[in-house]
Image (tube, rainbow, N blue to C red):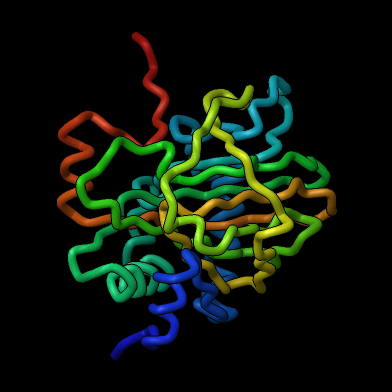
Length: 243
């Protein structure tokens, strides 16, 4: 059974993003919420894959926590609803040869008020002969303007990738963008938004007492994943311990 309508697929192709309400039910959201907290409070040791995207030098507080490849640390995630549904939808949007490239957790902690700058994911990647790629951003908490929900610039994926530059955030990239011509995507827990690899996006900082937890899955053709790996491209973010 198809999970997406023809109209939804057309919207994604034309606009570069697609909102899916209620991807997860209440019980599933509770499962992911509890697991997420196990990562954040270090009951699951993700130290080799964990960083603060804000680039802050304050080691006592993470503003934007990023944990790469949670499914590598908890393989059962691959058999749970989020990964299964997101993969099926990604295949419906882009083709049956689409596979999971990597996953990650990103949380904007309460009262950190640190933006994620405007950027396109494709700016981080090597030039690929097949540029099909999408990410699925699943809200575990309610995502709204004040706690840092996502903003997308419609149709930006139809143009060439913009010029990006490094910020002070330890290698994070940024480019020019504006809320004025973009869509603010507020989500309830368990809802999600797909966006194309070339879609311009950003999020405000979190000025609230709430977390803004999200689980992101990233997809591209199996052949392109294999090509990346053959060129030594590694999305895990793993920090190697020197002996």
